[in-house]
Length: 138
Image (cartoon, rainbow, N blue to C red; front, side):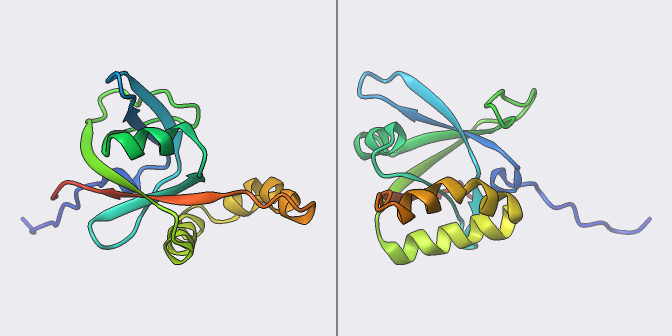
């Protein structure tokens, strides 16, 4: 018998991830996102700076993550990953997270970003930020 290395699949390896943030009342709000590993025990995604996720994260950094479909339906049997997240408005950090997302998702990111680029052309610069998630030890 040969020894095999079994690589544990990280939540950041999933195509879509349901990120649950929490309101001040404690009510959970789940949102499907693209997520990418950042190589230092963290993962990240980008979002609008005025999104509900950002508002909730500024009040409570606790998040839960689960594999999901593009529309947010949880993948049956997927484990719940508890983590913490912070909002970063730093342009350099945003660029590194966006780069990781683009590397993972390829042309799809470019196509989905056409609307953002059109807004920029007409003078409406969207405010975006990066969400950095600290994952539990593997």
